[in-house]
Image (tube, rainbow, N blue to C red; front, top):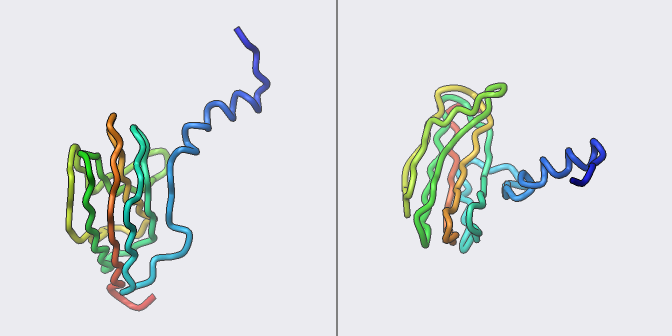
Length: 130
């Protein structure tokens, strides 16, 4: 058995978290679509796009996948993960999400054993001036 320093042990525990791809590097602008083509999802990996929403906002999303994937829209409330939208083994979806509470929401795609490639688009429409 190999001994680890506390820092090395923490690094080993957090390494799987580094495999989550959070793609949103610039804020999603209202009315300006975000189009992503051929986003690779290696086996059992996830990809996220996150955006802050308030009641009255609408987030239009569409995606297609080359293999069945899990998809959800979620936010964190303390230690609890709340998922207002969740789908298992889905190839495509085209819908509009309207939040009931102001939160930082993430759309998350998760591949199964065979991995997948995902095309997606997002369009945010603010309900009221901010």
